[in-house]
Image (tube, rainbow over all chains, first blue to last red; front, side):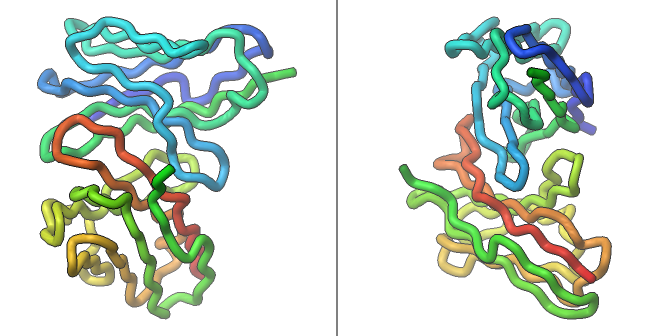
Length: 111
Length: 114
């Protein structure tokens, strides 16, 4: 079936450094790839998304890249700050208007 | 800014009791999702509505879980009887239409079954 693999499960970086989270999806028909940030005790919030007709998208310190041939997409956060600490989920749009979710990455920003 | 509303935020119950969660999506959002999220894992889809109709409830444990969206607006998810393994965060999300649009999530209901 459709699935999304996400790595790493935990990522610890020094404040000010960059963080990269990678995902691989299985359904070649997927055309939409959102990234969600979830803080403790809260629902996920969309931070950036990319559609299949674009290879890269940036929003201030956050960027997402997509390689449709390899079925890979990645989240890049530059100049990390303490408030970036959270769990990040990648997802891919599957059939029936449903998202297929990755398992999540816990990002820890060390002061 | 419009938000998805959920209540209660926290619920503690004993096993074998009945519990119910409520969700009010953003106005105009026709598609509504209920997810279950176990700590440390990604959201797991339980049921998907399009207006008042169930689109997919294949992952809903129907022997104890039920969901409804009678007027195609707000929705209720019920568990009866609750089991220890049901302890989780229950999330509601909605989207404006059936195309590629952001899923907006509510704050969730944290259920603890004792």
